[in-house]
Length: 244
Image 1 (spheres, rainbow, N blue to C red):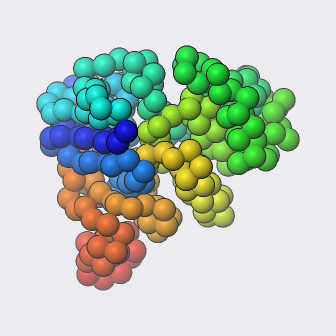
Image 2: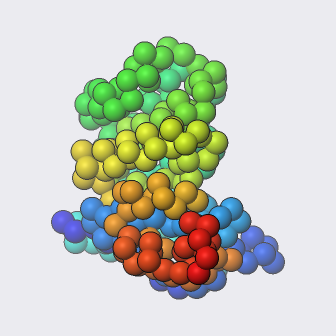
């Protein structure tokens, strides 16, 4: 059945500080949508709203799946995860004193993922061979790039249908950024995922995105497909360093 993630006029705040102001976007089944913007413009807040970690002060977030509509803004994070929504958080948020394999197994805690542990673990090791080589290593002792691979693989272990990826390029070298984005595309295709990716690196995000939304000061200021975004003067000025 079709999947649609709908964000409608969402506002969110931290006390008196407004983080989101009327954000609306839509993600259809099988799409990769990029949420583009520099730090402090609300990308992570929107991800947290979708996951139920921050409650919108106004607006709706709904997920249409298997013929049912779920009001995510009224659900707990656990219930949202149980629907098949997974988040790769900014900063990875691994368990540093557990091994690579222990981190991966913790990703499979939801009931519907447990029966697929062996398959998903095999796929994670196939997608990221270094994780298999280092499966007994403590996660906290790995490099930043390896930790990012582990964070993505851990999310896949939950057997998701919708994958949210928050700033996958942060702290990585240009080569590792390129490899990580390429692997996200491979995982999306293999698992038939619907993906929302918050990212600062415009050029890398556009390699795999079907649609992009630019967020500035908590508001969506432009949206379009890849060709439309690349041809827009504001995008050229802010992201490509070109004169408008």
